[in-house]
Image 1 (tube, protein in one colour):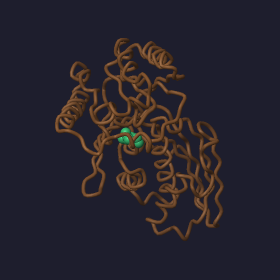
Image 2 (tube, protein in one colour):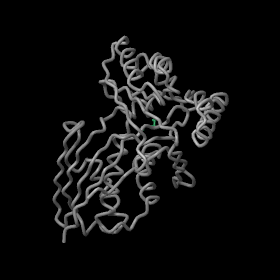
Image 3 (spheres, helix red, strand yellow):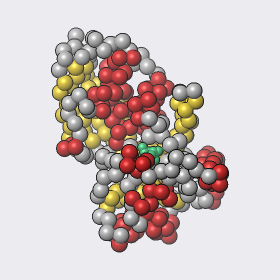
Length: 305
Ligand code: HSE
């Protein structure tokens, strides 16, 4: 018998948040939806609409389907369900730094888990998603919502999740070019100095403390980074000028969103003005861009039907 049909909604995410390279992330109010029916027959139907629809494979290579198959294998149901009907509606743009692959992985895992009676916990899904993605910083907020800090300990991810009380707006400038995470990781050095490690540890720790205590004056000092942004700035013309412009308009801080090319400003005021200023600076550097203003999504992946 085929499985019941399940529909899930999963937020896009912004990783790193300045100093939290590969550790911190935040869920944004932009979503992908996935409807899934597992089939006993070896038959795969994948329909994609919305963002990036023309660039997403609709065969065995599809990351949603690969994630589903991974979960079914772990549940020993790989021989029971050999096919699926998958319908995806995507808002999260591809390869821009808003965690589109994490959103797809989490959607596949969440929907498949629900289809087979939810034998796995959220923590199990975090582990599976991290194994597929390679690092937990996007998959954690996609699953849990809010602001997350994740570590991997003895091969197992652990995630601290909190929902800031401060009413943040997340202003994201979205350049009109793709940047693969692989390419953006290739420019990073293998080794870093002690001074750069200390630079980031202090800021990351202070950021979490300030978020937990709603302390905006400490928070303002914490968005800089020495581990990845300086190396990636050559891939995103005008990146540091955009950060300066966002802060001039009142943002608490700004950073590269994930591996880029999106740039994100965290603010409590003037979101539209900040977005306009960010896009203007990118335009001055001959990069076409649009901006969007999001809230922090508090829920993470949800079954909606
Ligand atoms: N932490 C990752 C990076 C996020 O910056 O490369 C992108 O997947």
